[in-house]
Image 1 (tube, rainbow, N blue to C red):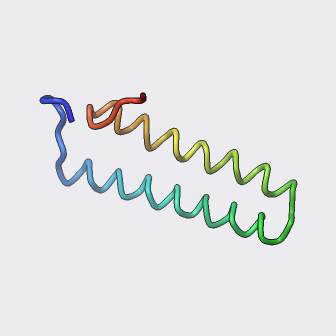
Image 2: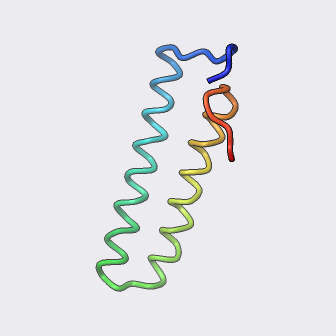
Image 3: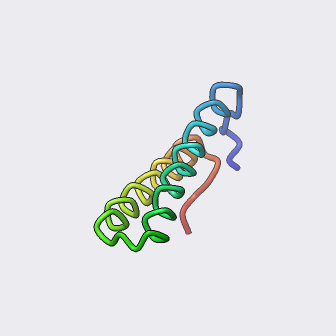
Length: 68
């Protein structure tokens, strides 16, 4: 974590929202996989990847994480 990173209530609230969105997207992806629905799986994996990128971008903007 960088010296300039600020982790406060607002940060944690937004991070929790991003985690919840990622979890929901993964649940949808998991169901599509279990159902063998390829078209839905393809759509859901894109949504899940997008949610992961949003979370990582948020952490990077706040100086909490960097991509390796």
